[in-house]
Length: 276
Image (tube, rainbow, N blue to C red):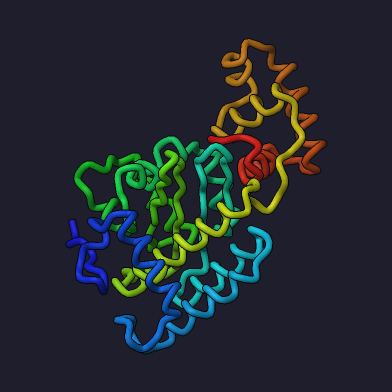
């Protein structure tokens, strides 16, 4: 397993606590990246300052996500994913549609090593560290291997733990196989923390779509569909017939204006209507 990344603050990125990161972030925000700080005098510092200024004018979570995605491009990261598992679960991401479909169809949310690792970590970590960890199972490594076939070959994830037991994960991915440098991890971690903090201030569900108007039974059916279950399996789980399951699925597809069960499941998860 590779050595832990060392941040510009002289400590292991993995060992630094959430409160320490928050303190670093507040120091960055309050000083507006003046020359006396220890940040490198290069484009990343200027871009980070611009990102902070631009988010001050953002009024919606969609705008924040677009600004964060644009900032991540400075580190060759075209793909960003934010998943909140708080009392208002939501997902915002721009991963390739094909990978999103594959992920939900295979039920990878149940074995995703990023989710498992994020619950144990306080600060950012490289995906390669998890992949090479002796405790990572073969099935868990398969999630990374398949993601790579869709272009997500290298990435980092930032756990975001709240004092109220809320939990979120921000991930940044790139198509190249090169590792993230310590400097990049620090900036992306601070940007993720800032995004999470700003979104929380809105006090409304996070996502590109409003919560969908589905009945309780429809929510149950689309939830198990998102978890990769067939109509027959859903019927067994819910104690209803296959025809009844298909009836509810048909209504869901009509409401979501799609003919694909997978697309409907993704929409339901993205909007926060159901939580995997």
